[in-house]
Every structure is written in C-alpha cells, then in structure tokens.
Image (tube, rainbow, N blue to C red; front, side, top):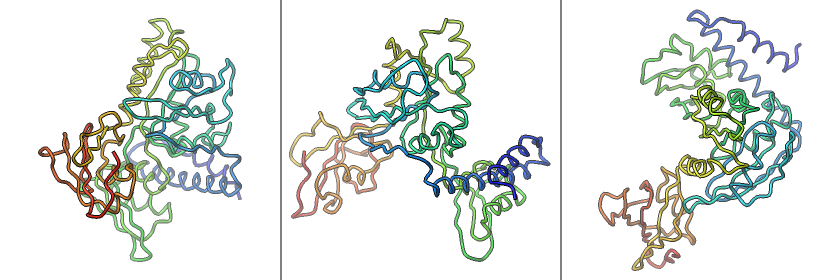
Length: 373
C-alpha cells in the first residue's frame, strides 16, 4: 500500500503526462478531483499531528493586509516604511521568523499590515513553515505580493497560494451544492455547460463521495471551479502585485519585467528609497473597497471628522454593529442622506446598502438609548 505522498505524486505525474484534449478532459477532471481529495486528507492528517507551531495573529483595524514574498525581497523594509512597526531587516534570507504587525492609516481607515516569513518552493506542502504562513494568509483581507529583480518568479509564488486553496483575484463560482442522505444525485443548470456536460459533473462529484443531493450551475463553470466548490476549503482574496528594489533596474530591464508581468499589472517601488509608496498606499486603500459613513445624531450635525469605516456592499445592519450601545436590539429605522438614498433623509431598514460618504441618523425604539456621536 503506497503512502499518501506517493499517491499524490502518482496522480500529479499522471496529470502531467496526459495530453489535454476533448477525449481526455473528463479523465483529467476526475484525476484533479482525486488529487484534491488526497490533498485534503494530507491537510487533515497534518492538523491531527499538530502541524507544528503556528502563528497567532490578533487582527485589528478596519482590514488586514498580508505581505507575501520570497525571503529577502524587502517585506520588512516595506512594513517599516508604511507603518510604525519595527521589523528587523537584513541582507540575508529568513530575517523575519515571526509575524510582525504594523498599522497604516488611509482615508480615515486603519489598515493592519503583516510582515510574514518568506515563502519558499514547496511552502504549500509544509516546507519552510509554509503551512503556518499560508494559514495566516488565508485570514487576511488583501494579499500584497512582493518580488524584486533577484526573485522575479511571481507565478511560482502565486502557485504556492493556489496549492493552499487560495484563489487570487477570483470570485466564488456560482454553483450551489446541497447534500442529502438519499435520493441520488441531480445536476441542473440555468446556462449551457460547455466544460461539464454529459455527466462529467456527477462523475467528479462522486470522486468526493458525493452521491446524494443536488448541484445547480448558475454559470458555465470549469472543472477546477466545481472541484473548488466541492472541496469547500477555498478562500477568495483580492491581491496587488509589487516589484520592490526598482532602483536596481535599468529602464530596459524595467520595461522587460513589466512585459513579463503584464497580466499582474505590477506597481514598481523602492521601499529603501521611498519611491512609489504613495501610489502603493492608494492602491491598497482602493483595493480594500472602503467607504466612509458619517453618523448624524438626531437634532445635531454629523461628525465629519470621525467616519465609520465600512466596506462596499455593507448595509445598515453592519453599521449598527460598529456603533456603541445596543443599537442592534433597539433599532427601528434609519434616515440616509447621500448617494445610496433616493432622496435626502430617506427612511430605510437594516438591509439598505450604504455608499461612500453617506450620512446616517439611527432611529431607535422609544425608551432606548440614542447612539453616541
């Protein structure tokens, strides 16, 4: 009986050696599903054994950004430039052996930035404490990939996160899966399936031991997207891509590297020389999709100095969670002025989605405490 690692290696090799065409796409899809199941089992076993010493990070601020890169690409220097943190720097590998947090201010928002140990090839399999680092990456709100001219292989770096179930700059597939105890498996779709037609979806689902229930496709999903949904342990995170130490590049080298990384749309900076940092900070802020909401207590002007920082798509209910007191329980209605309101002072309920620079008055039930300004 081969070991789990041997089984994984054998399936990976078979995928590499199988030419992809219409005749083999279902076979490759089933192999990918089998590989996903084996990797989940490996992760489960690693957790059962303790998985080594992990990193404990207390999240704070309005959002958290994780610095991800190879050793010695300048993550610690960048953290020190962006925040008041004191992360040790040095011209040698693995300077940072723990998670160092710092706080960046942008447009009234507090952004926690985490300097993490550098990733090395094989991190997703546990090399160089990769699993511990990647577990922290999965919990952040935004990934900042950092490379430099001496470590330019951004695709390999992104592949390590892909192998750890992190989907970068992607949205969750529109696939609804419901399991049942009996009744068999049904597959339906609201669109024509070009990648998973002819029973392919059901065969892949069975590789996960999914024999009863339903799968509903609301988009023309790929094999990999279906596997991601069935695996159930994927996270979908926005990311930005940064080339540090750009002062080392000649104009010709910079043009060549930009062409190589065209699909990533990189930002060129120098943390040491403080080049490009303003553009980077603005990019971070916009990528986190912050909105500012101002609270207006009844009969008083709004506090325009201290907005409540929310994210695009947040509603009145999320605003109530950020305000002091028992407003979630005593809330009756809200009045809204701004871009999300159809008219000034519109009365709305908990599900009303807010926009940047909205002004909100919270109306509470009689006898309840009013919100603090």
